[in-house]
Image 1 (cartoon, one colour):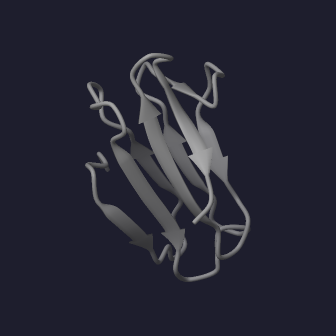
Image 2 (image 1 turned 30 degrees about the vertical axis):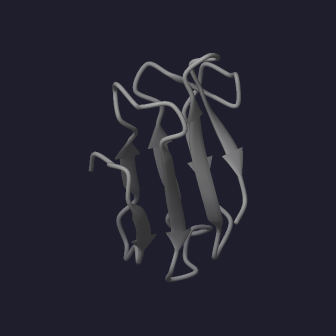
Length: 86
């Protein structure tokens, strides 16, 4: 699943989700991802960085805490998605 600049509420069942962040995000572009089912501990969500950094690290992000609620904001100067809460 490719994510755009929208909020995304996930209700995973038995299959893990992989979300791909935009390849060419705009400065201050944000994405909000929520585990609406409270099942991420059993069915983790993998956020694929798509060539960008997440919190300054070259790696994908695994969300595996039930009812997680995160917001990612892109900073064009650093080329990184910043991870924050509500």
